[in-house]
Image (tube, rainbow, N blue to C red; front, side, top):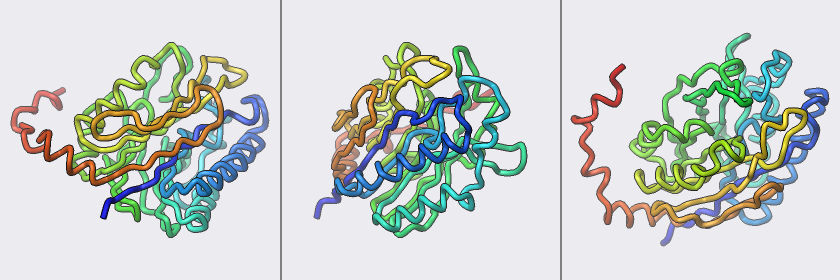
Length: 289
């Protein structure tokens, strides 16, 4: 019997300007996503991923300690707990990217993974942290992740997570494949003119090299007051052959839905034996200082 999983990606514009009160921004974005998650459930989605730092703006466009107010404990915080309730309600696996407080002054860019029965399975912390102009001052906000590349056994299959800038590093994408990922989600916030030409190049390449499905999410729109560029949306799913299966709108709220045939992974791996033919004994130079 085919293993068909209906996946969903949610991209959403900022509902309040970045100059608004933080609690107002956060509430408005959570309320918006609660409705979008319900719409995804109505479309039959069994696993859904939200965009990077989904309940706020991409605040890394500036360096301001007020954004530390967005941090929450994971999974004890109210947002993760709410998403556990929604996962249970909709019988849906969920990947929920939030701004995590580990302890006072130690913060991570994190995505929690919740099973379809509402059980919190674990989290991934963004490993590679950019710090560059224009407007990507992430080292001001995030400590580099320290949890490795976990893969979570969910009701729909084995799910891995990579976050935004991570996608430029093939090593972690390979680790997710070696750890058994069948679907890898990459929630992102990236703007046109900086890396758009790579958006449909790198992640299909990861899908091909590691022979799994990829769900790539990017937020849409221009965010006030920073205007660092247009977050171009264009979220998509691609299959283990690197073929884009479904794609979202460019600068609008959207829910991208695709049916993922997980049996295709075995078919592709039996054709292209990349894991069999690896030579890890010859790769020491990759991890040398």
